[in-house]
Image: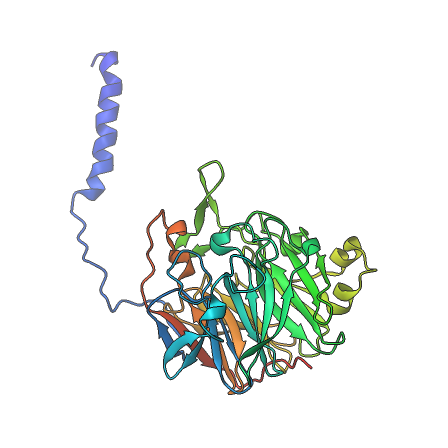
Length: 394
């Protein structure tokens, strides 16, 4: 054998050795539909099915009335706040107020992101004045209180310029009537392109402070990549390249005694807490306040939180189609896990011992699915029995 043929012989022998073990074909069949699979648990009940615009928020009053909101993100939204009555959603408090007043942005409702019943006979509407996540219209972002007995507007608070940035997107709110002449409201700025923050507003005067602006606890976790239904939730960046969805401080909950505010960026899996007394105290510097924030560890990624009267905190886990509960001792338990629980958004505890929440498939919107809207109607208002009362506000 000539030496120049040796490499070819070695290659031939190696190939034969590799093929030999696979001389017999490997047969396979489609995985049976009844093969072991992810198990659901927890009893979900559907309260309402939405076949039109996508809802984001829900609240249940102390008398059991249910209100929902529809931000103007691109769907056809004839009214941005509604009440569920006799199986239908009707404009609330009326159709007229659900239209923008082009001459006075502080008047009509432009795009409501959140509705919260305060336990004191009113429901509050949080108007971002930022349809489609545009810059908020000047003097348009506001809180509107509706008296539930008369269904009339009894308070309108326009956010002052000192707390509003061009990137501000006011998202969720919690009320405490134990502090201030008419109470205090805490809100999240869940900006998509600027600093997140907690906004603290005195209801009587309308004065407000922007707190924890841009600190890590209110900001997008730079290492966070949300994964829902096995796919990363990506958006198009300024450079045209895909990047993970980044939303700042979003979910918020107030402890039963009013002394602790819980909050989380949407683009994070961590729960944070801070003293409300420090938040309200203008003499406490931002550095001091940031140092007082507690990182309570991972809870899952949430787009909505709530607290009950017994010291527990509830949070959606949109990556795992779940609702979770943090016990007073800090331990977490999963209350329900169900593949139909597609993006739990906003939580509210009713007077009937149920936890109510929206499942709206937010992650299937065209912006996150390469320009293709993959949402499937209906969207759902669901509930889960928790045998707990809402945290008191007074």
